[in-house]
Length: 595
Ligand code: ARG
Image (tube, rainbow, N blue to C red):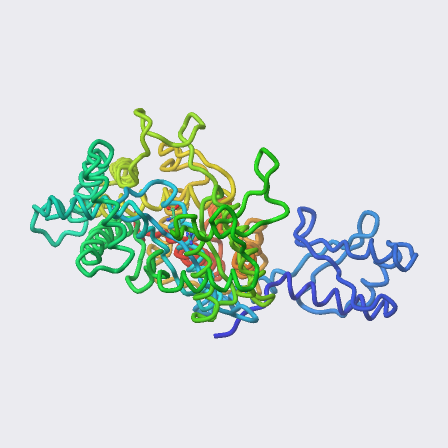
């Protein structure tokens, strides 16, 4: 399987060679190639160079053009404006390059030059609590990054840092001891969805009841506090009950992830409690090295640039004055584990932007302690808030957080309606069966939610608007899924004609535009993997579908003038379908063959 250099990189190389041949005094100058509306590419590196060499840019540009050796990639290179080069590549070069991509399973996409090990912390709900839209974002963005990085050849280790520890477990466990059947399942079922729902409704009920008792009954409160002590000392019976809460919650989490069409593996779920054994040592090391100091009984780390509204420094508290460890101690221990034991060179955290200060302080502390060396990168892929249609943080009318499962169900329902309506507009023989409508409805509905999240830059807030998300027009997954299904249907209807590349043919403008965009898939993925910006992949795919739509309107495929053109257009269709499918898969979105 060979990676295929993009036309952009080939052109860049040719121009760089011509530059150093024509202007040896320039050294290894960058021609600065970019896409252009005027031609296929434009190079404007000569402008800066002319300044440096104190020459006339147009003259230098003309010299560079003269030094270009004739070949079959460059069709035309012309000097324009103050000294730009406008580059048009040959039709043959486009089709040849695409044919090389089509011959490769990976569509010619290169592997990363120096792949490393990335530990990615994502999809981290909390035990005994309902999942909400914030957990959705982490899961969707995290899962896309896992796929994209793995495709680039990176070794990816997944960590679901679930909230499975804390003083609230004293109250929950004590309540369960006093009401032993509260977590029992009534329905006897193997169905993931049903048992997931039941697990969560049990946990919810238990949470509310124990909280009410805790707030109203002083004696229960005292018993709960004693229970926390037993939990922290590892008392076996208490631990057994704590484990029940974790297991029960996992049944629920897995049912939601399953509905989200996302694979989560048990060994990757290493929650806060997974680092309990390291907490003492983490604090001791911080104290011994002087990174943390004792302040008002707590163990703290201070930062010059982190101050509260009153101007007083706000420390990172690693151990509270009552001796308890918090979120920060756990995260610091997790860093030690991930770097020292898992061998990570990159730590990626897909977490709400509202936790950015926490991560800034945690990373800085780990650097001072020497746990994060210069060779290890720590990044928070911080995401914004999900807003309701009113532009305020997404809540129910009663002001409660919206249950994630309800949203997913609603999306699936809406999407099924869209799929059904579209199917009913088809001739009888082509309509989908009820079963197909249900299956596609789920794929379209979940795809819609994922795509809406992934198509805006993660750092920005976005409005959760189901009407818009399942719309057939505009920048939605449904639009892309329909584009895919349309391409596939043409290929299916092609009879004896096969997709074959014909580099000898002249291309129509819409074919060239589509072809040049197909050639950019690899570059786009490389960029997205390096910058952790899956929205750029979404934008690429949307543009691909749009260019395909134009191509389809302007260039008849099966009715093209010559058999060679039919084959060549089918070839473009086929490569478009494969690229769409691969790209969508990396975003975690299905592309049904028929819709
Ligand atoms: N469970 C946390 C929450 O629901 C997110 C955990 C993020 N990861 C971490 N290593 N702190 O907000």
